[in-house]
Length: 117
Image 1 (cartoon, helix red, strand yellow):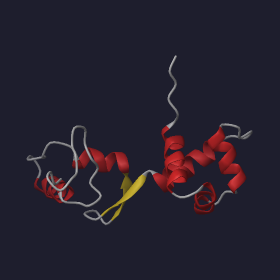
Image 2: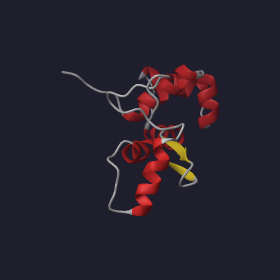
Image 3: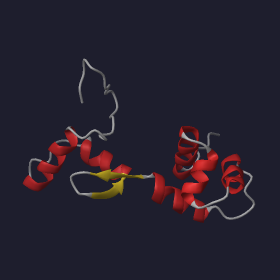
């Protein structure tokens, strides 16, 4: 049986690996010990609050087109969708996404000098 860890926990692990558990804990407003226990799967309390805070802090990006933070899943859905030719406003947003430095990479895509996004 294969179990997948929750999305919020994967986000926490990536963020901790990118900086440190201590720095991430400070950003989230938790102690290093609490975050360390959560990451180790040994936190004795309810992790729903940690999960909510992790998603709010780590599962968003700033959309230059909308001038606000949006969920990464929404960013990905807009940027990697087919061009929405039925709606001029949505098409303009989609076009902006195609040149955005934060544009998520889709399956089969590669970002290098010989293959610009």
